Amino acid sequence: MQDLSIELWGIRFKNPVWVASGTFGYGLEASEIYDVSSLGAVVTKGISLRPREGNPPQRIAETPCGMLNSIGLQNPGVEGFLLHIYPRIEKIDTHFIVNVFGETEEEYLEVCLALEDRPKIVAYELNVSCPNVKKGGMLFGHDTKVLSRLVERVKAKVRKPVLVKLSPNVGDIRTFARVCVESGADGLVAINTLVGMKIDVRSGKPDLSTFVGGLSGPAILPIAVRIVWEVFQEVRGSVPVIGVGGIYDTDSALQHILAGASAVQVGTANFFDPKCPLRIIEGIKSYMESKKVKSFNQLVGRAHGIGVLS
Image 1 (cartoon, rainbow, N blue to C red):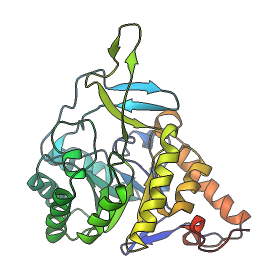
Image 2: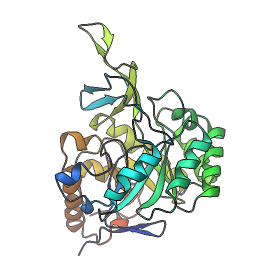
Image 3: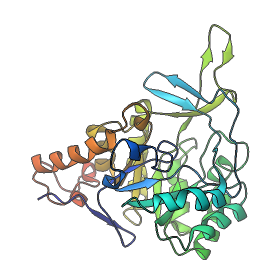
């Protein structure tokens, strides 16, 4: 029997297929389509200290093999999340990781502390790389000193694992990965969206109200896989790397895994193929059977020459 379960930070996950922040809400909508408990984990839509209305429309634009978004982290705030959403996700039998956003270090810390005593939340994913908000986001992810201080402050106050979602919109992402690890991060998520733009040639104006937004979808797969590869080499197994970006089927997920991802997050594919994560779970299992691999962990990083698949 193939074992798809994984253990990260002392937490047992059913499988390595998770869903990415901002593409799955809080898992409640998808529960009307399939049993969300089948997933390894749900990474929630970003939560901030106070409610956010997000950016004005137009906030989404379709592109070849992908999409641009400039939602602006619309969310009910951590108090609204705990009051109206948390009681409902408690009934879903899988782990939840909260994507945390703030405009200041204090806001990041306050959101995490508000969630510390909620057992359904097993970890935090610090969003330091969102390209479509004016404050916070990339302000933290593009400055190594600011990023280091943020990670250190959060780690000093919380008990749960702290993951950092890395921005691909930097010169050398390996430097930022190393800074996160040195500052105490428990895991790295690679990658967030790339900055992109689309112009309507009929009107001569940008499609998005904010002009630029985050590019995601199958179009960014080769970039995401390359970054997972580089980050895996940089951290040398000191912390898990979680791969996200362009995953839409089993092969694309396996590329992340063989490059070094200990788990993967399905993002934009949830919009055009809601049951995609379930097929990827079964696809990875079939792949392991075909390669006579019993434990999922045997696949992680294999493209680096750690063992040879027949």
